[in-house]
Length: 366
Image (cartoon, rainbow, N blue to C red; front, side, top):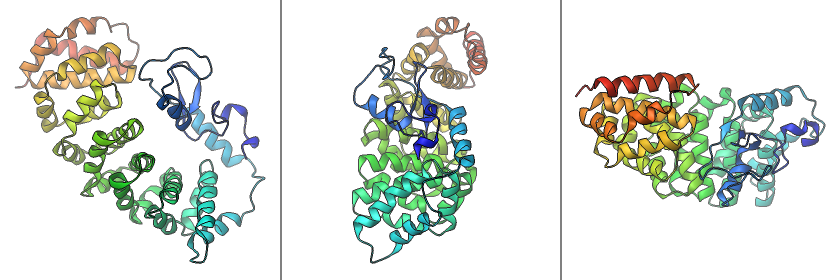
């Protein structure tokens, strides 16, 4: 199928059509899964230019290219599969007489097809395929489970499917995987939570599951690189809902996130930027020794997005506590702010101005 698409839609690493294109600091675009695998293998050079990359490279979503690929898929004629084939594959999944190998082939095929075909994703959910997919998410066979999760993730990409998937019981299965799945399955499960949480009503539903937020926080502790990053991303997605912030704080997320931020997981500052909005979050951050130093490190070494959230978090804490404000001055935050005055990012400009005013006038509330 990939031969139907322009070469610019293909990942330079996998040579497959990109489902989640991201831009590396070198300016080149790759499929997230492929470039993350490259980075997780220890490489710190751009696969194309061979130029060195930062120790913790930031991957910027290429929303424009993703939209182009999606729209091209909708208007391009399909030459590969007869219309009946997806339903045939679903039938193979649901039939008690189908061998395990056939079921695995069907899952693999459907996962590949739905990766870039939004119309097929809708057709599959309408055809009653979701219960069959969820059944294999519960499978004790790790290979079947991973393929089922990949298909479930693809189905969740369409906003029209998100509420229905939650209603069919997807969250309960995914949370179970977060707790006891393989590393790869846990990472996919966290990504599914992020995808489902795009719809506002799902944020509250997911957070209300007793094990959902605790499982994500545990993954921040026990997971490997990709698992930690996906868990942090999922927490960021669901903690825009106020009640979920308190749940994450109650699970001990704050000191864990600050530690991960100190270790280089910049995604953690985005979550902290949400948790700092509530009093409980600010109080927990105040208890962490070295919190100011970690935030200062983000201002010095972070990406534009990291600096943005670092400024916002620092300002909230300095407004809240005179002690924190004093510590920020002691750590030279005002001087660092002066070095950022040439920034063109509008949010950075606004947060920078707010923080300088707070540090200069000490507008602490208590």
